[in-house]
Figure 1 (cartoon, rainbow, N blue to C red):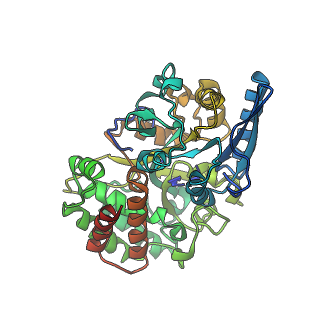
Figure 2 (tube, helix red, strand yellow):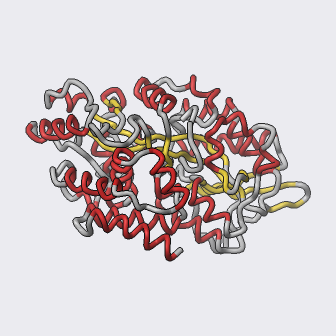
Figure 3 (tube, rainbow, N blue to C red):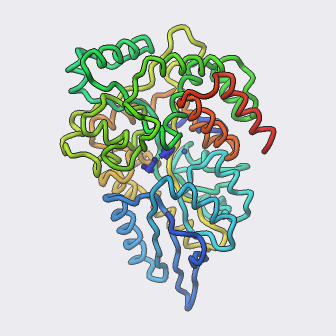
Length: 436
């Protein structure tokens, strides 16, 4: 996600993650881009695609490359920062070419496993074996068939960012703990003439967060795990999740024209609406705090933000506290050579991870040794929630094979647009599984 499910710089994905098989979420053009690892006279130039196309991230990644070059003068970088949504389109195309980038953004899960089929991703299992355990359980989410094809540099969890000042204006004293509470708060905000929710439906993946969280609340953990593993969505809890979502959308909680609103691009994006006090809350990842930096006219916005997890549904079969998340990382192409995994080792070091956190380039580091670098009180709340969550489920579109995840996202987006049914979302998943 900034850095995303996102999902997100994102946009589309956690210190001690108790996760099973699936947690479980820059380029210019691919053609004519000399992205094989150029080596001459013992020197190597690594092409690197990442999604930090805005400051501070863009400059921070450049400085990390510069520092590595100073210590390894035979390794240089050709960096192409690209907006997250564009990057997600470019990477699959590049992997079908003969010349993919040496280093590129990687969100792990089933989407990574789909990329592995191209034969272009480097198996870094041996190259990382001496240090990968420093990252804890999270690194397993960047494996396919037990082999390490990606390395995470940060981890994510999705929850609600909200404006404490707008909640106060509406007479809301505490964040909602249940869906009944959330529905009540939406009504209070509307009565105070405040837009309750912002959502970037133009990008589709923010819509998916809603359905996925309802599924996590309505389905047992065993059901969720077996669905991701066996690609079967037969339990009625998934239809119930769609029914819950339909009921919630029916309360009109979102901003006007939300279907055409992007998630992170410009002050009019869903992130910008919350940053500038035009909406009271947004269901988004922890990356939202730094994402808002270039979008906010109110530079004190961070002090006005709070965070709460997706509410529980009273009496539902879902395990309370199960969270939706993911992370950002990088993969190496097979032509990159040994300098690439060594550079990813450098990115994973406590020193660099601390720098990423301190500069708002990463919010929750993948290396637990750098967690102490988090100073923002709201992000500390997010980190504590993540550390105590009984399970972190990777965003469905990332945990599933790419074609299945895309079909699910499309069906949910259509549902938000008033097309389709709760059953239709499940049918779209089943059809995509059959056609892959």
